[in-house]
Amino acid sequence: MKRFLIGFAVGVAIGAAAMAIGTARFGGVEALAARVRGAIAVGRRAMEAYEQDMWADVRRRRAAGTSHTDQNPSDPLRALYER
Image (cartoon, rainbow, N blue to C red; front, side, top):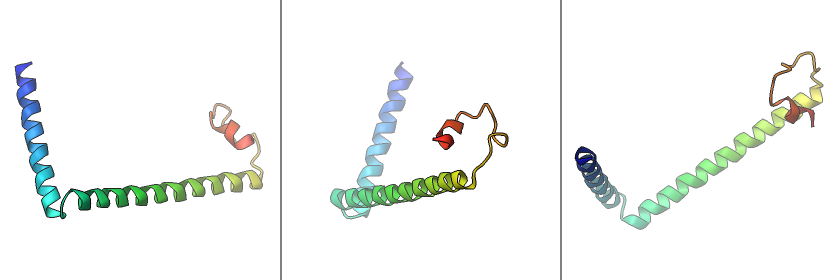
């Protein structure tokens, strides 16, 4: 237990030092927070675009009329395509 607490304390100290250096380097806490918010927004846009691509693929497959003999009968996602 003592080794864990020492390791935890060292980790906290390293994390705090990294955060202090990072915030000083990027112009303070607000600037760093703005960069993080920007990265999250870009990630959300990418996720939404990928989701739209997946739904377009589902619609394309449904329009192509894939037969039930081509599908794996144990496929758990088959019900999603059959709606």
